[in-house]
Amino acid sequence: CLALAKSSAKIMMPTRSGMSNAGISNNKVKYSRVADSDEGYIDLQFKRSPPKVPYKAIALAAFLFLVGSLLIVVGSLLLTGYIQVTYPDRTIPVLIIGILIFLPGFYHLRIAYYASKGYRGYSYDDIPDFDD
Image (cartoon, rainbow, N blue to C red):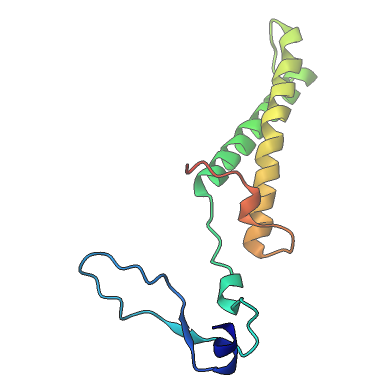
């Protein structure tokens, strides 16, 4: 059977699944030629689908970035004394929490930006998706 497939270049392979639902005709299937020396592989199985953008994760990263930035600014103002507080020992935790919230937001926004610009090594797959 393999020798027959290699000898004849006129054999066509479907690019979509041949499964049909009840009542739906399958006459819009696109076919492509199988190469003479296919070795069991076709080029179509290695084509990438367009990337799925994780909008919820990017929105969460933007929220973390903005809240973290706000807490860093407020913590810095509290620490320097521009904002008067009755308990000055509570200013450092505001700054630390701001940094801890800012870092993951900045990290994921940076990945999303580089992936949207098409930089090599960055993709939307690196951002965790919450669409389970």
